[in-house]
Each structure stands twice: as structure tokens, then as C-alpha cells.
Image (tube, chains in turn blue, orange):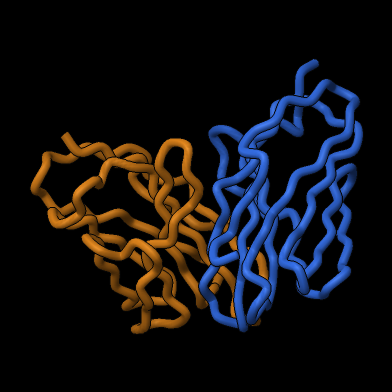
Length: 112
Length: 113
């Protein structure tokens, strides 16, 4: 993996269902993996910054896991609510460089 | 309130003119970034700066220039050499210390006609 890639590009979820999606990133010289939520008409806001292989982080109904050896991270939304509708971005940081490279995002639409 | 401010929110320019987008932060962050977003694409890095008077090219720096004369300010100039300048531009900042989160401005939508 040379770039940060996210899949799927978009998904629709029924309210109350759980969902997850993937971020793939270069595993060489890995330093940190960021997740952001970007709601319409707002600025992106940080969810998690993860650094350790096997790390799991949780914020409310949203959680994330990290595999630095194979270069992927999953974001999970449990019991989706309409307010979870947003674009979720991940960003890779390598070797303590300040450069942050983003994926194209996964747009989640939660249907009531 | 602490935060990062971009101005203006909407900007229209004629083709061939240079235009400067403003980004100011009062978070005392050392690192600042400019990203561009096009429809259906993610955030692409234009320039970033780790400290005053220093900045590095990102992945799509051609046709852009920046300066970092003050810690609080990181203006982006879109020059006439940028072939497709119409886009949404986002500025961000971070603390030093490696694995810290980025804070974003509200963005500037530039339309070149």
C-alpha cells in the first residue's frame, strides 16, 4: 500500500444497525493513524489517534482497531443513529513526520 | 475562543489572477497544513509547516505558494499557474509532539471563472 485507502466509499445503514469500514495505510515507517468525522457544513473533528499495534479505542458507540503490521484499521459504529451520518476520514502519519496523508473517506448515511 | 479561522468562506476570482486564502489559529500550534478537496475525492495535502519560517511541499504543491512568517498565520496563495484552482480548501493545525490530533478551519470554497 503506497497511499491511504478507505473502503467502501459510501454505505447506507438502517437506524439501530451496526456497521464497520476499513482504512488501509502504508505499514512501513508507521507512526500514527488518525480518524476524523466530518459532518456536513462543519469542520472535520478528531475521533481517535492511534499508535500501537493492536490498539483499540472507543468513544461512545464508535470504536476503532489498529493493525500496524499489515497496515489497516477498522472503525465500528454500534447501533447507528441518524446523527452518525457523516464522512469518516482516516489519515496516516509516518516516522514522526508532521505530514498527514488522508484517505478519500467513507460516507455513512443512517436511515431512520 | 481558541480555534482556527479561515477567511473568506466563499471566494470568486477571474482566471489568471492570483488569490490568497487566509488561515489564522490562536491554539499556539506549531504545525499547520493546507488541504484541497475536490468532489468525490479526499483531502490532498498542498503544503505543511512544522515551525515558523519553514514549510514543505505536500503532494500537490504545483501552482501554490505559502509563507509562515508568524506562528499564528499560514496564508496560501493560489497562483495563475494552478491549472484547476476551483476547489474547497481546508486549513488545519496541530500541536508539536507527534501523535496529536489536527484541528480544522471551516474551509474556503474558491471558484475561478
